[in-house]
Length: 169
Ligand SMILES: [Zn+2]
Image (tube, rainbow, N blue to C red; front, top):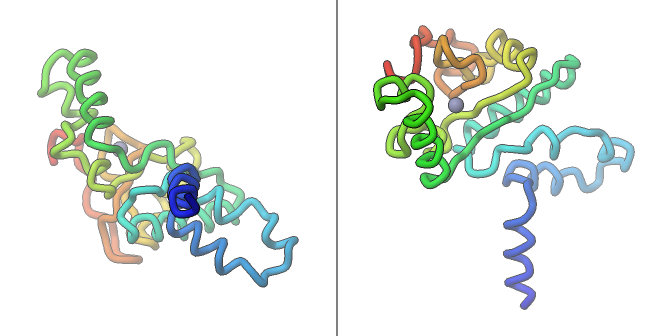
């Protein structure tokens, strides 16, 4: 029962591995510091992401928040079933696979399903990440999606040219 309770607890928390590492390492830090709205809230949404992407985002979001800029993940890892539902919605909304692909990809092609993409918000935070994200290798990928970022360059190297939309990938 203990083991299963542990599994359930782990599955229910929104904390990522990164957040758990942070909270573990936070033991020994004064309580006042632990009460700051930092690691756990910043890491929200990183479950299921490529650990490198999660780490890059956590570092960037910490810097953004230190600068007073709001930044959070609005959509990160998606299961194939979740992406399939979005894809089918897209087909309904846009009328054809060609049109839908500008905004949503099927599960077999989506970088959200492989844990290699994040959508962020609000607009101010996304703009900050567009301007500063390459410090951690994070890049905006598409002209038509100001919210979608991936690990797409080496830290401090320039981001690759943006594509018009996901259908050009
Ligand atoms: Zn996206």
